[in-house]
Each structure stands twice: as structure tokens, then as C-alpha cells.
Amino acid sequence: MISIDSMFLFLFTGILYKRILVLSTFRGSEQLKYATVALVFILVLVYLLYDYLHKDTGEKYRVKSIILSVFFFFFIIYPTLTSVAARRQSRLKFTPGSELIRKFPGGYKLDVDLACYLMTTDSLFATEQAIAFMAEGKNPYTEDYSNSLVGVFGEKNPAFKHYVYLPGMFLIPTPFYIIWNKLFGWYDHKIFQLIFYIGTMFVLLGFIKNKTGKLLMLILFSLNPLTLHHFLIGFNETTLLFWILLSLLLLEKKAYKSSLICFAVACSLKQFSWFFIPFYSLRLKWLMNVSWKDLLKKSYPFYITCGIFILPFIIWDFNGFYDDIFKSIIGESKINFTIGGPNEFGVSHILKYFGLVSPDRNFPFWLLQVITGFPVCVALLLKQYKDNTLTSLLAGGTFTLFTFSLFSTSFSHVNYIGLFVFLTLFTWALSYRESNPTI
View 1 (cartoon, rainbow, N blue to C red):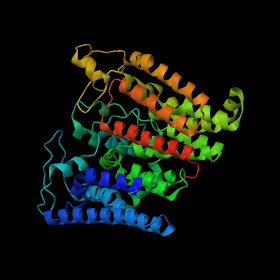
View 2: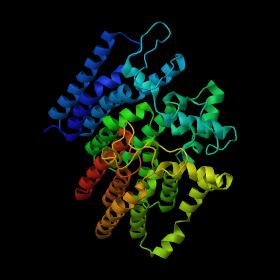
View 3: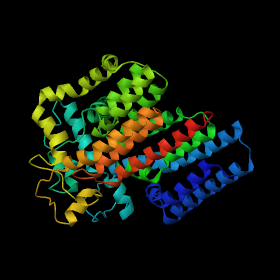
View 4: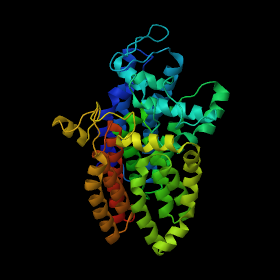
């Protein structure tokens, strides 16, 4: 039989090849583009045949790993570096919407598919600017982003006024930014994100013992069309995933202090991590076999790490910090993110369709989140209490986060769906491992 990793590789390649290779071969001819596609499918055929014709051995694993590393180069590393180089070497001027056609030096005409990759996201440009502010000693939650590249996404973008991520998102890369900038005189945050994308792949290997299972886990994450596509555009979910998964891996290895520190870093990056706190705590209490009172005392590495990241900005400018990371998200700031805007798929669109909400009128989405999300969270915690496994922790955090996100002011961008899809696939893979301990 053909193994499951081969089937997912074939499936993902069939979905990915056209979009990714547009970026991989943007300086070449059309013939080179199609030749590259042909090479990729030849490698898929070799992978499938080798898998089918050979028994599971160490040599089979090594050969499949080598072939898979070529996929990683074609679909992850080369497209990222190409995107960075294209942004540096061209004078491409971005405009909102579909008017993205310009010319590169030498007269190469930029097609729309490539432009979408180079355009990246306002979150990436905002993070780059926040890092620059921090390096200059300025508070990213106080400063205005009007003169940054965020402006390419439109004059009414709330990101001009609000940096919605937590301090870890710009504090961790700041040393890297300073060194890189001194060496080369420029900075592209995609390079930093690439480090964490590759790092996440190595962390995932630690969860699985079986060699075929390791290959499957790598494919489910690294070549997943939803996670990879949005990573290449510049979304930051991978950085968050790295710290969450590393904390869970350390938790399973019973390195509790290190796990708490890594989990605190995740909770200092993005609000998404907060929804895993009750499920993580329940699992940690069970593994440590302590009371809730003792757990609170022994969790001091978490408090200290979060305090190091967050407390300085609360003291520096509490109103700016609170307005950016909380009020602007729930629609209580002077300038809020659009309710039911384009590229959004939440419940807000249903309410907007029936005329119950409008972009210029406040609506208590937080109440909807509590009404729907709290019962879901309680039900999942009760299930985990009865079967306190890593799978239960992941499922509880993922489905609670999904519920709260779906009923939020703006459930925007497919990258959120990509995060949920991967976490669900990861949970499925771990549940299979838990029922088959040798995997």
C-alpha cells in the first residue's frame, strides 16, 4: 500500500504547484516555469513509486527525506528568498486591490499572481515598522503608522493607528533587525519568519517516534496549502505556532519550567494563545500532580516572562497599549477595524446581511463570543478533565479559539482558517499516535 504521507504529498502538490511556482520562476521564461512544474511532478512520481515498491526501512526513510527536502526548497525556501529579493531589487509601487501590475528592472512584466505574493500583508509591514520604532526607542503602541508601508493598503486602514499584536511580536525580532540592518542596510521580516517556519518543522518531529509519521507531520505542516500560502504572503501564525508547539513538546517531556517560559512567550505574541491557557493549565496540573494552589505558585516562570514582555508597555503608555490590543479589536476605539469587511468570513457577515450591524455602528460582539464561546470552553474542559491528554489540550484550545474568532467583530483572512485546519490535522495525528504508542 502507498503510505499516507505519499498521498498527502501528492494532494498538496496538486493544489500548490501553480501558485508557488509563479513566484519561484518569476525571472525565467514561461518554458522554465512549466519545466519546473514537470520536475516537481517527476519527484512526486519517484516518491510514490519508491514508497510503493520498497518495504519500510531506514534507507527508505532517508531516500524519501531527501526527495522531500527538494520540495521544501522549491515550495518554501526559494519562494521566500525570491519574494525578498524581488522587493529589494524592484521599485514596485503597491496599490490596493488588483491594480498591481508594474515592471521590474529589465522590462520583466509583473503578473497579478506574483504581485499578490509581493504585496504581503499590512500586518507584516506594521510589524516591520513596530520593530523599527522599538529600535529607535519609540513606543509602537503610541506611534502613528501613516508614513509606513501600511499605507499601501488604503488611507482608511485602522492599522495606521493601531498595532494589534502583543509586544513579543516586535521585541523578539528587534536584535535580529538591528544586526541585519547594520550588515545589509535593509530588513525584510519574511527572513525572520522563515527561521521560525523551519524551526516549527523541527519541533514537530519531536512529537512522533515513527519515521513515516515524522514525514507525514512535516508534510501536513510545511506543504499544507493554507499554512504555506499565507506564510509566503507574510502572515505571522507560524511564529506563534512555533512557541505553542515548543511549549507543548517540553510539557510532554516534563521540562515544566522551560515549557512555562515558552508558553508565556506565545501568550506575549498574539491574543490567540490566551485561549489555550485553561487547557494548558489543566494538563500541567495533571502532569505535575499538584493542587491548584501549588500550581499557581509553581507557575512563576510564566508570570515573570509575561511581565518582562508586557509590563513595560503597560507602564509606558497604558491607554495606547489597551486601545491597540483590545479596544480596537472589539470595536470600542475611536478608529476600529471594519465590521464584515472584504476577506472576512465570520458571523458579522450574517448580521450585516440582515441589517443588524453596520460598519459605523457599535455592536456587542463580545457578548456573542461569551454566549457561544464560554459554554464550548466549559464542555471541552470537562472532556479534557475525563481524558487529560495532549490531544484533549489541543482540541480544546483549537475549538475554543475557533468559536471565539467566528463570533468576533472581524474574523478576517483565510490565514485564520489555515491555523485552525493545521491544528486540527495535528490533533488528529496525535490522537492516532496516542492510540498507537509505537508511532
